[in-house]
Image 1 (cartoon, helix red, strand yellow):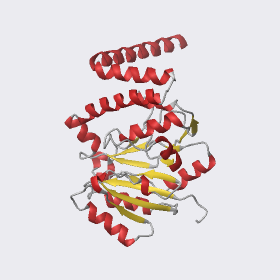
Image 2 (cartoon, helix red, strand yellow; image 1 turned 180 degrees about the vertical axis):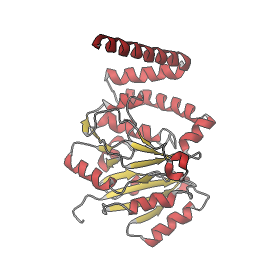
Image 3 (cartoon, one colour; image 1 turned 30 degrees about the vertical axis):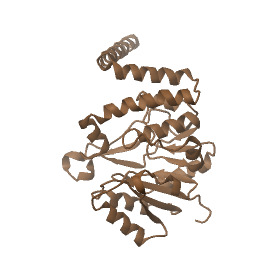
Image 4 (tube, one colour; image 1 turned 90 degrees about the vertical axis):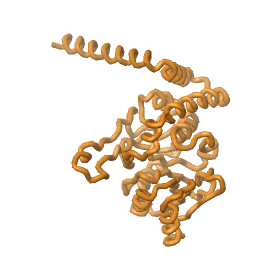
Length: 295
């Protein structure tokens, strides 16, 4: 185990007492043992702080509890591992994620990051009606391949490929791209982080699902959709991208076209919906013509 690359696992939590223990236990269940777990308290007022502290007191060799003034620390500055992984406090890992992701980064030293499709997990409720709702998202790119920059970025920006989730990233790459952006907390912070990496370095897209993304009414995404914060966060994200691409002197025309389309889509949602309906109609027509030509 001493020769294995060390991994820093980061769980940032805020009022997550309902699920955080299950997330932590999924880290302890890993077949790969060369890890540390950083539990970063984002200002919780429920029992999740007590739960996190109990794990750090029980196993200080592997677990550290972190809390900083302003709750702005995402734990990366405290990470000791050569590789860094992130797990949301309401989600869980499958037991082989670290073992297999570390092996991939060891096999492909040019890859800055590895990720795979995630499972949309409804059956955690135990309700019979939820058992058939689980599904694994479509990757949107050829599986088990290295994707050179910036090819992946315009694909996930336009929802043609999944945003990298359940990621393992080399810490030196995180430092090189500047880590997370303080402007984004909650929604779109992952998209911003992944955009910076995918524009900068090759990533490995695996076809393996290792991550269970719990679907529940209190999730950040669902809450944002109800309150309208998702809409505002999307505009903030697109405006940030415009500035970031200019500052980084990105010249790739595919990247700029994708961003221009998303800005137009945001400003003209009705026209975009009509355009998409037209595209789907033409795809059906072309499919029928192809079928007719073969018969």
